[in-house]
Image (tube, rainbow, N blue to C red; front, side, top):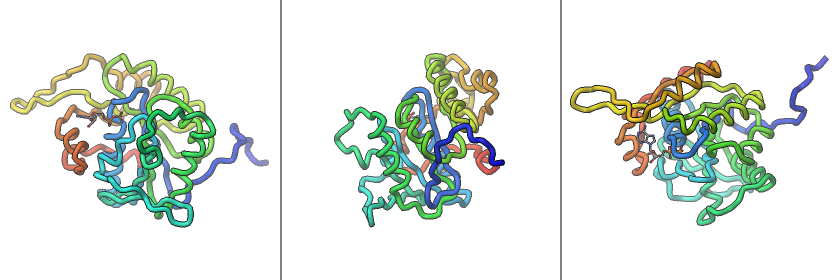
Length: 251
Ligand code: ADP
């Protein structure tokens, strides 16, 4: 007998892609896009073919991080991803230029997600990383309901302020049975240049607390590093500054 599925809806595989990983957060501005870029670049450095879908409607910053100002070509109804630093990139920003006040309700969110994921010519990628919008909205539902996914990484900062939104995110991914691969705590501390001492700017220990409470691995803590921000602003690579431990993506 075939095993009864908990979700009877048939989910799409994305053509030309082996693994699909989401990078999510409860709130905006915690460094989700920066972490997406770090993971993608690190995977690429370790010899994997990687793509990014920037699905962050509230601030599609991936093109800027990768120094992209062009728009993709459309060939036979499909977008050709733009390539930067060896990574194939498509951004929701390419579709909503100068139109940031759009309210993304169900059908429109679904249509746009379909365009980004299925109407893009991905070239045999080992990993496709999706930079999600913060929170839990119709874009999230559209991706979770319609696509075959491999896992999600949740980015947070140490402060307690973000907690309730992180809990909502964790709940959503659990509801869809998507493996939560781990939590990354960003902006955890600052290293004093002269002494090498770690200074914890924000009180709170959210990353560790969530990891313990929900039994999710804490992948790493990322320091506040001004060079990271400078390179993001100027479209320069990030792996010389910080290397993330990404072995968990290989299992
Ligand atoms: P999100 O995608 O969660 O909205 P971003 O990745 O766009 O957040 O980061 C928000 C801002 O913070 C950006 O200007 C980025 O360069 C900066 N930033 C993110 N992480 C760090 C860090 N560890 N150190 C310094 N600046 C950072």
